[in-house]
Image 1 (cartoon, rainbow, N blue to C red):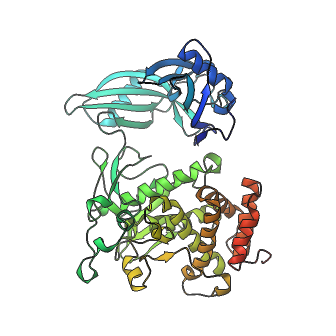
Image 2: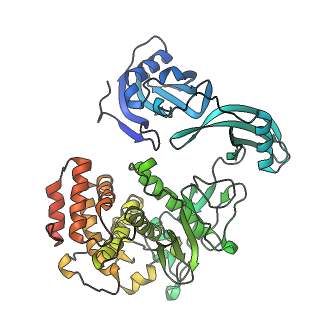
Image 3: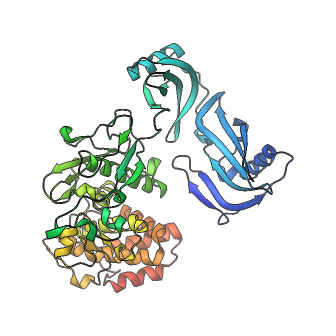
Length: 507
């Protein structure tokens, strides 16, 4: 039996089972590749949530590489195929399994046998054609199950084609309601494309000097500052409106609408701020889901709304009344810097966990400090220049940082030597006191690493209140570490907070 700790895994978002494991070698038995693959899956059925599921897997194909073999099984439930329901087992030249990918639906999530009333194939085809508003020809219609997070919906998959211009559409129609759940053109790119800064031009270039002209006039970021990405979770409207993030609050006259999923615009063009906000916020929510905050434990249970050009001021904020994020266009556009986007996302996260967070001086400072921490932690791996690791917003705050003589220029740093003894009650800007909390969190990360630090720091918020204090926040982190990691490295965490002057016995 393959033991935990002897492989690496990517956990699935919805089924509670790993969707991929690798970095191991496991011997197999059997006369054929299919028998070897099935034997491995039977032996490790509990690992992949395949108890009672293996009979639903049918051998689909075996692909032979130059020195490896790849056995693929597809899943059917109640005689209907599960869209993207499959398992693949990958064998090395000595018939040892070294990789498994798993998209099979566990038995506990299976729907009851389909005996409900359904629309006809003809009605499904008509609805699919009408949804495209084009002269298309129906190629085929197939009943199947369509995964929607942790449930399966009965659907018709309708394939349609058009010759001029050449298009090949797949439209998913709900078998009971007739609602269009999904549609895309296989000939075009499967997912919308966009250009973004990741996180910003200064970090990508490793320096700011190429972005400044004479008299400190800003230059347009060069092409190497952009990264092409896929935009996930979008609906069929051509707008940046998805299940997790929507930019529909943005001024309609400044909103971008893509043709054939092409959102590739530059920073000086209309729509770039909107693309930046959508991509980075959607990616951040997906990151939270990878930490276990999904399904009933999801932090964001509603779509996060965004106004990408909500003010002409050089400012950005989270609005708890509308649960939305607002980004400004004064100076360097706020949404051009992904670290600023995720700083504000930190406020949204805190409000989603603990509504009205930040009602006292200390709680407000903790909000600002956590926003800086989350942005810096999230993007540290993108920064090849180590001097940018403890900094945030080096693009949006470039001119501010130059005036403040920060090295490198930025809005704030997370490696301050400030302690709680320097906390200033009734400070005009909570960001100043927030540097103390941000530095404490950054110290936690330096000792525990990103994965563990992010987990316990985010988890700690569930026991806080809107009027919390540094002391309570520190104790909540210790509690989260106890719950998630059995209190390992507790003494190291206590030393961090003592060094920052945070009294763990305080109120």
